[in-house]
Length: 172
Image 1 (cartoon, helix red, strand yellow):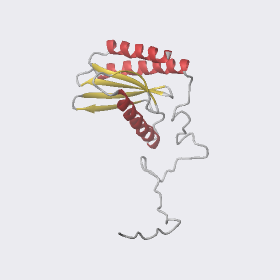
Image 2 (cartoon, one colour):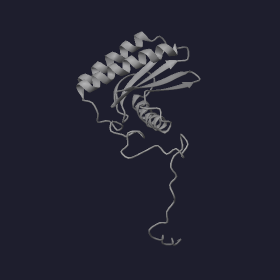
Image 3 (tube, helix red, strand yellow):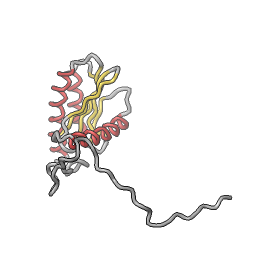
Image 4 (spheres, rainbow, N blue to C red):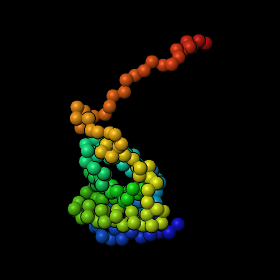
């Protein structure tokens, strides 16, 4: 598939532009690997974790009313994990050493995310990802922000009684 080759070329160019970059991965928002350059890391596992983190990040930006998701940065004891939106169907995750220039990481990550979005949209077409048609709190039809509910709180579900009574288990 041509998109995989083009995206992999972009990931390799990204490695030359960011000193201390340890790896990069482009995946769909559903967690499927498009292309990767992540030595010593399982790309499928990283793509799945990226999709999970992306879901939480979407939820956080919606709950805090901060607009559409753009990027996520995690700092660990030995470096950074940065995730950038690449259109509505793809995401770029970068692994960097602790001594990376974070400003440069953001600059190049954002540029590469935009380039990957163009490549994916050209080869696959826009939309179609799990989050492509989701409504934000502002966009949902008839949904107004509840001023009584503080930012970041979730609605509470009231437990319901089961429709039938469970049968007692006989021991034996």
